[in-house]
Image (cartoon, rainbow, N blue to C red; front, side, top):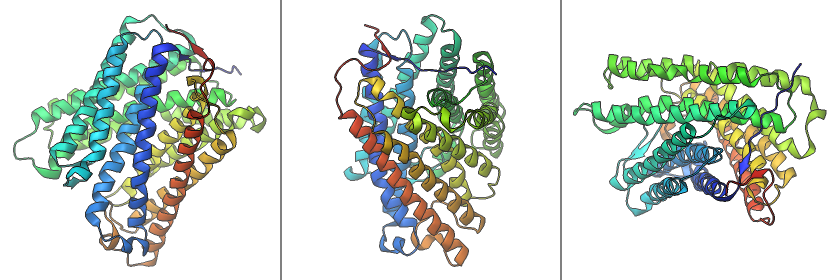
Length: 464
């Protein structure tokens, strides 16, 4: 059985510095979101949550936490990956995109301390209904859009990339296409928004179409990262580059329905919402599911002895990423109503992507000119973070099955029966363990970044 290798080269010079900047933004967003996560988990844990009477603070912290840990982290990491594109030039545009995204992130984070109020827990992008926060969100989105357009222009004007690298970059360029369609869907929703739609419903309608399309970008990127992590950690891969190109293309075909949905259904209609739900539910796993099975077969046929000693963190991150992503997808088919099964679903899928990005960060840091990663801590971190998140997800799913509503805190959760209390307590314990795992990740990154940058980065190719 042929074993295919998928590796990601790191450029040198200005392209490397640009990629480092996007990585710093991504990790910085996790630092800030982690500080807010402590309050969020404690506020929802039985008995402990009674100590925190500030429900408005809970919702405000939740808004900023979600936007930093999902929106900024994911999109900034995507910006970092796209900055590794071979043949990159026109760096002024790239730095402009990064500057806008960084400024927007800082404005959003600071806005609650500068008077921004009005938390609205809209799906995909919760917001503070205040000009300062919304202005920061707009500036960040403008920076990300500029990075997408920059990456697509570079892809169209660069030479063809062959072999396994070509398959990886097809996946990443199709992710750019999904990102662009997502931004266009956002604009389309804004243009077609009826005047009578106000408050929470306004933001639900605004972000619904684009938010669903954006999930296709995340899935494309996590598949790219899985292939790289599998290769560096010794997993036997029987999936050829040609087959991966087919899978990447198949995985994004469903977003072609986006303009059809906008033409056929009014943006505020139930049909519009259901059509995007079906598009994502049936289309977004077409490539991820078979690749997950191929990775499972590869892990089982490779054996523990196949893992290079210095790649054990990457193998652990890959295993937990695929597991969490799969669990989140399965739980998605159990959703019925607005209970905590919904966050159980997206926490599983989102954290599965986060775990993959963490593992790739361990692999890239030394190759981006930073010091060595503390391997023992990096190996332990996926187990702590992944186990905690699995507990968090199962606790939410169990509680949702017993009627606990989502986006509530303290007494508003209505925890009266023992199963409800036990489920949310298990969720809280898992969340606290996951926070420890998140802190370990940040410590690993900090120790690598401050561990010396002498000499040429490993595995780079200079573009200067």
